[in-house]
Length: 141
Image 1 (tube, rainbow, N blue to C red):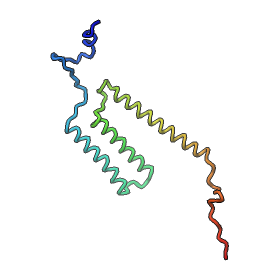
Image 2 (image 1 turned 90 degrees about the horizontal axis):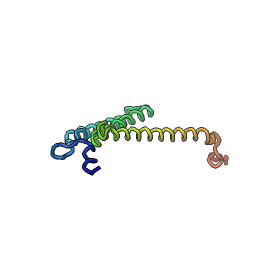
Image 3 (image 1 turned 60 degrees about the vertical axis):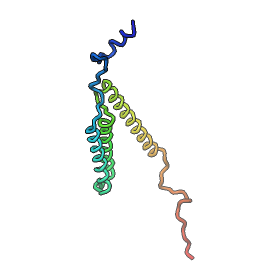
Image 4 (image 1 turned 120 degrees about the vertical axis):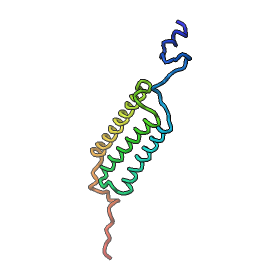
């Protein structure tokens, strides 16, 4: 089998001049970058305003809201600046990114779960302070 035969059936994306066509590849445009930039600014300004204006009183709710804005901003960066979508490389880039995110989330959740339970089950109670930390009694003079 010659080298020409191997490359002839490789992708079949050649035109009459022998150039490759990648219609589904990333296309960078100024307007695409500006949309990504504006979304990034908005997704940064809103959480900043929420925190500085003390709009969210509950700490748990604040963490959830700020986390949601962070996740949306990551997605905006992946789509607008990294040009990740389901079409590039047959979807493998997106699939590998999803796998990585799930793997990291499981690792973080598992680590927090182990540390919380280790702290709960292994640490001595803090009810009895060591004598060195107790306040000295002042004797009346």
